[in-house]
Length: 87
Image (cartoon, rainbow, N blue to C red; front, side):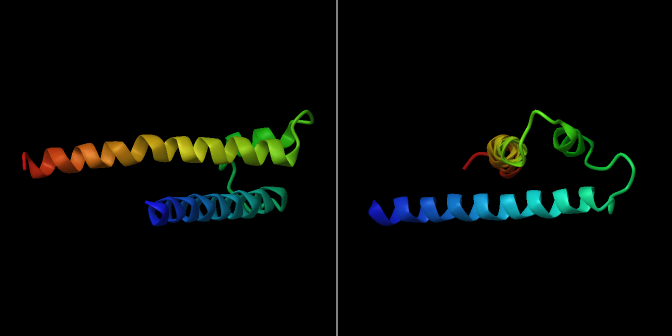
C-alpha cells in the first residue's frame, strides 16, 4: 500500500513539473511573439491581465490541464471498454 502511495505522489509531481514546464515554454513563446495569430488566445488573455500574477496564470493553466485529464482518461477507458465489448 505504501509503495502505491509513493508511486501516485511521484506521478503527480511529474505531471505538475511537466505541466509547469509547458506553461513556462508557451508563455515565453507568447512574450517573444513566436506564435501564430490567434494561437494560445486564452493564455495570452490571462497573461495580459494586470490583476493576475504569473503564478495565478500558471495555477489556472495547470488546473485546466489537469481537469482535462480528469475528463479524458475516464472517457478513454469507457470508449475502450465499449470497443472491446463485455469481458
